Length: 348
Image (cartoon, rainbow, N blue to C red; front, side):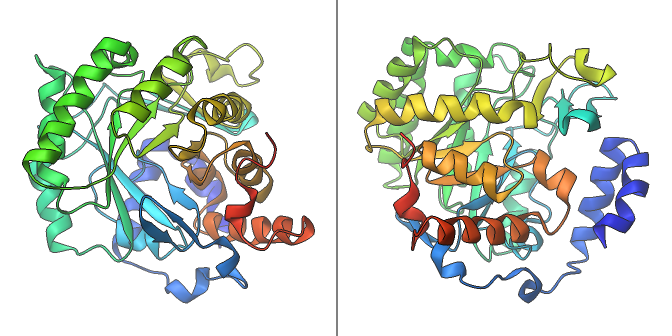
């Protein structure tokens, strides 16, 4: 059905099409049985102390205000991450702020953390009980005078209702945010967040979402900080400000973060580098250009335990997770691998 509606959707402004998708998902139109696949037990994996039905997750950015996560879980995703959530509701950057680069199977966005804010989103999650694994991605308001405090407020409000919290220090669309990749600033932030965990007697996993644009010299520093400061997993990667030269689309020069196909190899290479540094002490969630069983498998053998997609979901539609699962299972069978866990890091 998506192939029939896609030309209509892709004639709409990307943000209008996205809002239409959210409204459609609120109707909860699809039975979950439609998105189950044969031999899915091959994709069962335990990470973060939780049993994931499969490693294919939906990245933050699609369901920014936690409006349709249960409907998304029914589409066959192993987990869903909502947000980025900021303390106060904010509109984000001026429109237009999302651009489809169809020739490149990519998107550029400069949304700027548009969301309904902590209070409304927290109430929404409490009232609509999650029916699967739910992560909450947290970040600071654009006009914040204290970004560290905003992260703390996010953790304080969601530690008892989410399955994990992602600390988003890597969006290119919030000024000063990527400064948290600096070792001292990162240690200071994580120390404060760990204090909140201790004070509230919670073991909620804290995940760190990293930029693909960091210098290679920062990789061992960040890995070391993560290991020593009780980070539960690292998400690699957010969108990139770079890699525009080889793009075909006329929209390639739009300001914002680039996602989709052009990010695949960049993020996969970074997964390989972090995997070696982390030495199996912290799992990796691979993001960037996941749109098929092949691209999913490439990230897993590079060292990712779980995966997330966003742009691939936009281009492949509601059956994206199901299709990727089927393709991934076929690859595992062809490689003689019985369970996805046995493929992690196999290509290193």
